[in-house]
Image 1 (cartoon, rainbow, N blue to C red):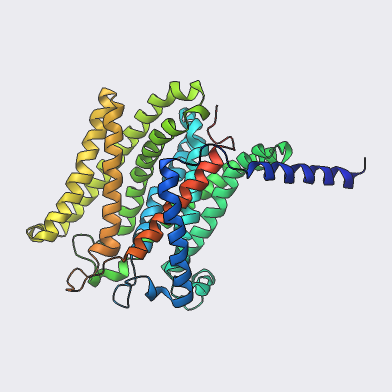
Image 2 (cartoon, one colour):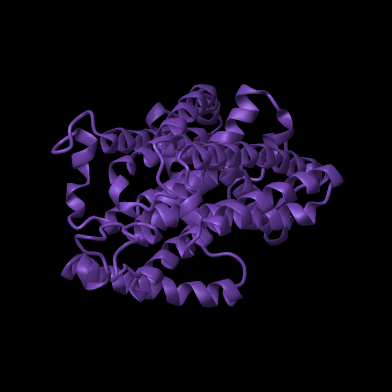
Length: 398
C-alpha cells in the first residue's frame, strides 16, 4: 500500500470517528436541558438584534457606563474563576505534587473553555467587534498600553492551554504518535502558561488604575493588580472544589475507583491552599485599609456593603476552610467554596459595575437581554464541557 493510500485511509477513519462522536448521547429530557435550551435559543435571537441594530438595542450601556455585566462577569470575573488551571499545572508539573495529577485534565479543560467563552464574550460587548484586532496590534492604543499587554496575554494563554489539552484530543482520536509529540510540549506550555497567567490576572486589575476618580475608594487601590492576582488563586481553587463536587455526582460513572479513593485528600489539599491564600489576601486588604485610613468610609451604606464582602465572603469562608481542613470535614469545605466564589463575583462586580461611578443618581442596571445572554454563555460552556468529558479521556485514571 502506498503512502498516499495510508494517509487517505487514516483520514477516512478519523472523519468517520468524529462523525460518530457528534451523535447525541444519553437522555434529552433532563432538568438542565429543559432550562438551558430555551435560554440559549432566546440568547441567539438577542445576539441577532445586537449585531444588526447595535449594542444599544439590547443593553443599558452608555458613554458613562461602558462596562456592564458582559465585561464585569463574563470577562473579569470569569477569568478569575478560571485561575485553577494555572495553579494546578504549577502544583503538578513544577512542584511535582502528583497527588493532584488526576484533576489536571479536567481543570485545564475548564480553564480553556472559560477563556474561549468568557474572553470571547468581549466580541459581544464591543460596539464595533471588527475593531477587536486593534489592541492586539497596538493600533490606536500603543505598545505601552495595558490593554495591549492583556490582549496578548489572553491570546497566548488560550493557545497555551490548547496545547496543554491537545494530548487528550489526540488520545481520543487514537493518534498515538501525535499524542506523544504533543505530550512532549506540555512542560514548556505549562511554564509559559503560568507566566502569562500571573501577568494577565494582574493586568486586568491594572486596567482599572486609570479609573481612580470613578471607583469608590473602598475598592480602589494602587495595589489592585496584586490583589487581582492573589484573589485569582483562591478563586481558582474554590472553583475546582465546586466543579469537582458537581462532577463527582453527575459524571460518577466516568470516574474510576482510584479517583474516588483519593478525592478526599485532593479536596482537603485544595481547601488548605485556598485558606492560606485567602488569609494572605485578607492581610493585604487590612494593610491597605489601615494605610489609606479608610475608617471614615465604613460608616454609610457603601461601607456596610464593603464589610459584607471582606468579612462575610472572605474572612468567614477563610476560617471555614481552615476549620474544615483541620477536622477533615468535606461538607464545610464545599460550603466555604461557594461563599468564596460569591465573594469573588461580588468583588469583581463591585470594581467594574456596582461601585463604578457610585456617586451617580442614575446608575447602570443590566437589561434582561444582558442577563439572558450571560446565562446563554454559561449554559453553552456547560454543554460543550459535558460533550467533551463524555467522549474524551478527561477524567484521568492515573
